[in-house]
Length: 202
Image (cartoon, rainbow, N blue to C red; front, top):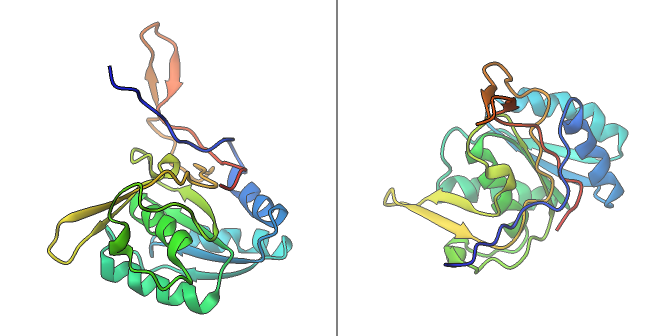
């Protein structure tokens, strides 16, 4: 039988207010410039966190241009903005597409490296910036996965499959909780998804 290894955040918390904890966690880690990535639809959650970042002494800039599954061109556009801001933290707020983009920006911002050089398994060794993933959807698991998927120019999907764990993945309290319960084999209800926030940056 083949061995299975799970690479996940070292510490996870969940529940109301856990998204706000992310700001304090990044500040405690010494971060002072956070680059926020969202879709147009999830940008309102970034605005909601703005006072928390300000209270923590962290400057912020928002890029809300992720409108679907990110392409290589989309990533280049995000990186151009991130490079000019020079962040020491990257915060993804959205679904799996936003979070995948955030993972790659945290790794490549300021390097000038081409993401195509990291398509494959085990080629991305580290991230330059600390990363927080705040999912607003359920089902992708992107917030606890070290991997990212991009659409290449020919429409094919290319993966950056790495051992770099997500740094601060939560499912914050703005997640849609309706119809979130199912039954275990013993009949007890369990949540289909939970809010998660890692406090450790890798």
